[in-house]
Image (cartoon, rainbow, N blue to C red; front, side):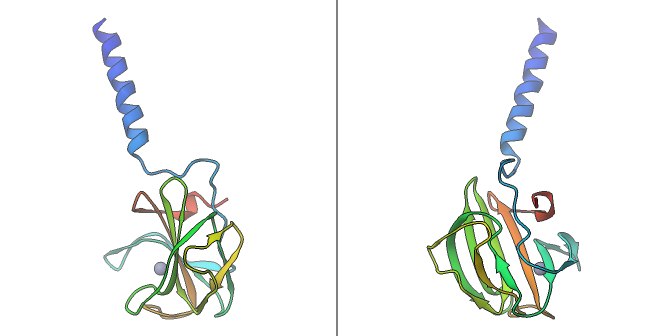
Length: 149
Ligand SMILES: [Zn+2]
């Protein structure tokens, strides 16, 4: 009886851990959002957490929505993302597309996976044309590579 109760406790713990862990539902694999190769990965960089991946390409390269969602913010951040688009999706998932040269997505509009949302640029804190692609689940940045189809 005692052992059985322990098993149950472990099982409940695992269930709680799974629920607490930020994960995108399996069905929601994300699409690689642009052309070009990854010039900087997710993770520790210069003593800071790089919260996304950088995809380097020529300025003007199209950026496509990686997931279905609603454009929750279009803005400009001089010292950071530059021109950016923020798209909110199901399962508490949010994607930020940064350093754009131009943005075609309209605030509050619905976008579908593969829709053109903007173009690659080097606005904000950037040293050359690239897309900063950041995926957050429940507010926590995750490595997009894990979810790219
Ligand atoms: Zn970046």
